[in-house]
Amino acid sequence: MFFARQVHYAFFGLTFLGITGTALAHHSFAVYDHTRTLNLKGTVTKWQWSNPHAYLDIDVRDSNDVIKHYTLEGTSINMLQRVGWRSNMIKAGDQVKAVAAPLLSGEPGGLLLEIILANGEKRELPVPAANTFKRTPDPE
Image 1 (cartoon, rainbow, N blue to C red):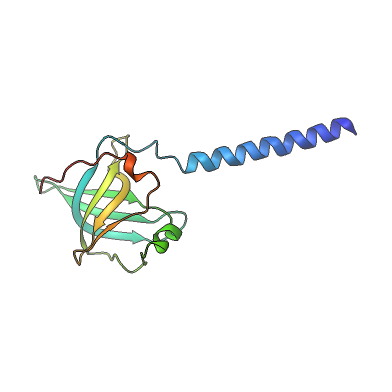
Image 2 (tube, rainbow, N blue to C red):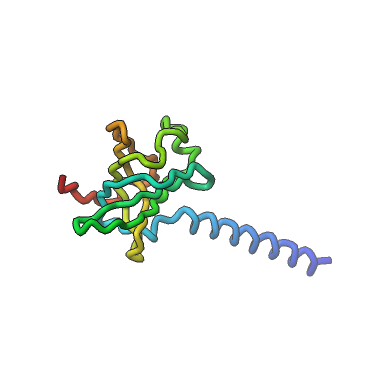
């Protein structure tokens, strides 16, 4: 009986540690560069309003007229709705300017920090610890 109780407690203890470890890892910003940001101007190809996070896909044309596709992760739609965001604010085909913390891997993606919408409205995303991302001045 005593051994069964120990196994029972050990099982629940390990399960709890596993769940909390996964939750902490999921909300880490360690994959993003905190020392600079990307200033991207492009065309929205997709705005995904979904759980657990919103995603913005944009095509950005560089100075050599080459198009590079970026996927930018937003915060949760719950957090976005709390500060006034709606699913229909961004549409495919919109011309936008986005500020994002780039992926450390160098892949074309990042964490969406702010955006200037097609109508000229500037919106910041409710990113926890957003002040830890050093902003790179926009050359425009």
